[in-house]
Length: 362
Image 1 (cartoon, one colour):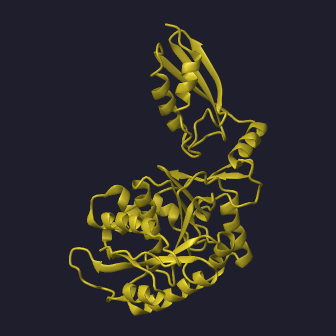
Image 2: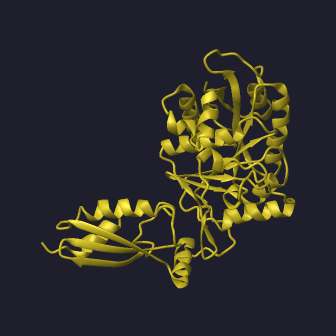
Image 3: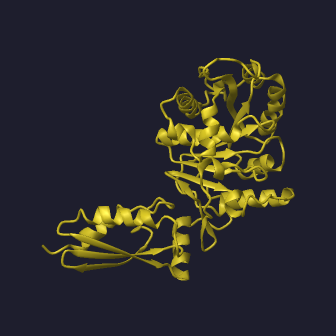
């Protein structure tokens, strides 16, 4: 049986670039198709030499092309795009958008995870919320805006540098999640020592030069407090929304009020409050007191979206580079985080701008 070149090409339409999340045929990455009886050879042009995810191409090409009638063997070779091809790819990915304009689609819901102080578990919640939204079928990205205290690379176990194609940054991926952090660009945990204007420039670059693609949700892990990054985010993404994280003790709740009020003053809508470390898993002991989340939600007149327990498994999973929601999705804490994602997704405005009331998730 003569192998059909058209059928091989249609099979390659199902091969998805693991970082760009688009078919290699749409990205003009198929350089050559060779047919020699029952054997098929394919050459894929990568954006950079030594692509760390080339094994994904190998597995996909072999699986899909072997399904074509008459094909008994598949050989995959790699090449590298020329500068002109990279420029053409960048133009295609921008979709006519000018450089240095925000690349996040207007249809993407941007949710900043903020807190008044450090140590309330904001980054751990962000990572697990991302995994939870992914489980709910939402196309999700994570932007680590905590430039000085970046931890998203560690929590997802990713240390590869982002691919740069003709000044466009392709974010590293963890499964279907797209991730971006200053930590991906630094060597050996080097500290970042920048003043305010540099922070703004970095955030602007992450929102304009990074190819986020079509996302349903972009979670932004904010630095604690009310500094430069919060003001820059409000300026660059005025439609962003905020969830405020606190722990139960009054000291954390009182500081969190400031972050929420700042968000409101720069035009961002506060969706609700998350009380983290509410009680110790297994004992119910309230190690950090009680009532801070409820008091904060009443003061801000927004829902208390969830009370998340203090669970050592969250820390263990993060140190292993895997959100708990991804590795133990059936445990009670992971389920409470998925329910939290559902609660955030369900928030909506009533006429007059009042949020719908939601049940507190425990």
